[in-house]
Length: 115
Ligand SMILES: [Zn+2]
Image 1 (cartoon, rainbow, N blue to C red):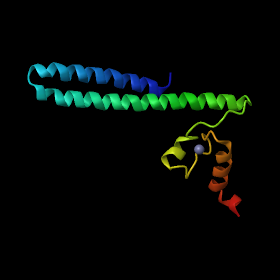
Image 2 (cartoon, rainbow, N blue to C red; image 1 turned 180 degrees about the vertical axis):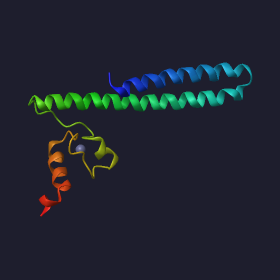
Image 3 (cartoon, rainbow, N blue to C red; image 1 turned 90 degrees about the vertical axis):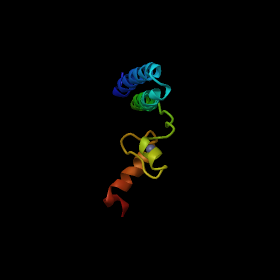
């Protein structure tokens, strides 16, 4: 279990609690449910993001394991999270699952090799 998964489960618990509190507060008035349901929706969104991060971490771990064992795995899509957030302009030289990008990002990071 990764830390992402633990956090995602905590957010699921929080979302459930906020939803229950929001629904219970409707006994006083229907508009009192809005803050609770808003917090529940926010916790559900955070939980989904953390579950996505967990699945990515597991996929990267499995990719790295296959790479170390010499099975020549196909790169993940996106190849690394840095490429995703930079629209492919930059790559993480340690965690990129595309080996060509690892090599080229090493060349770009080392100023002596560019000349
Ligand atoms: Zn990459």
